[in-house]
Image (tube, rainbow, N blue to C red; front, side, top):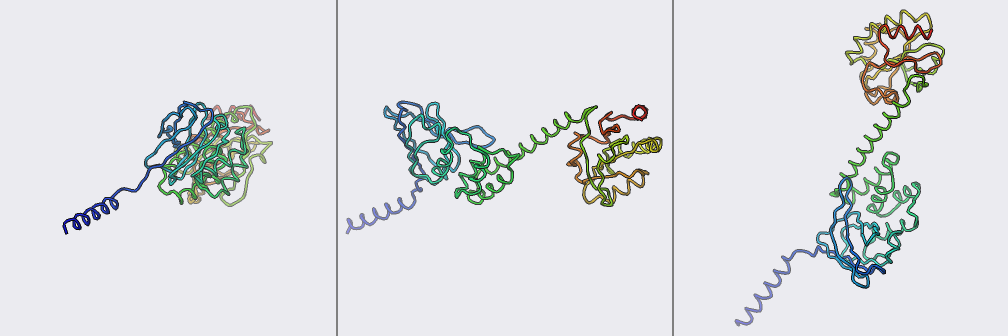
Length: 353
């Protein structure tokens, strides 16, 4: 009876231990790399906007065999560094046994065989089609848009496409990726990458605007609607001397400057001079814009705006960082002076008449 009781307790304890044991979260990555005898092998996880993180480090044996065990293996983009070769691999984090077979020199052109990972196969099969490493953007976009693996598509976009010229593709694959991997840190990394690209694009545009907006250069054309919906093009005013005035109804320095602008307009309007006013008012404040025109007696015809506030396209093209900002154009549409004020403005107009 005692033996039966002991056996029963042992079975119960064994069952309890088995039930309470944590699930096996280890992943084994092994391989046979010909020509990699005794070489160091490092597995790094690539994270956007942060340094790569080494998660495994070992040495191949004399025949190029290696094996590493990783706990809590996470989905992501990885680099397998074997000597000087650094092929990229994509894993979904659910793999248990991954095996890689290749020649050490073939790793540099992603010519390797991998078993145990669907995502890694999809990624490798596409990259290996381009042994020189030069993949046309059109081919990359097509892969990203059509691949069955959002993981492979996400990292192909990350590593091969410029955000500033491929944002729709990035947004599309990121939505798929976020649906499949909602807690992935790569999503925040993507957002940081997009923001960085936006800032770089704005800075580049500002630099380009500054380089274009110089005395003697042809002023970039502007074509925008007036408050009543009529479109006025700056280039249609060729043959006249034109003062481009960037302003806004909410800008106090602009409103203070307006009486002086009116005086100049009235002085020269019958001699071939006019003002082309570009407002940086915003959508929803159209009436405030109209009221300011009337109240300040800005009687010239050419009042335009895209109602985009500081994101006004002409303001960006002209490198406008503060208002009021003016550009005086000669009869050929070339910039004759930048920010002339008071007597300097009158003198500049007199020279051009």
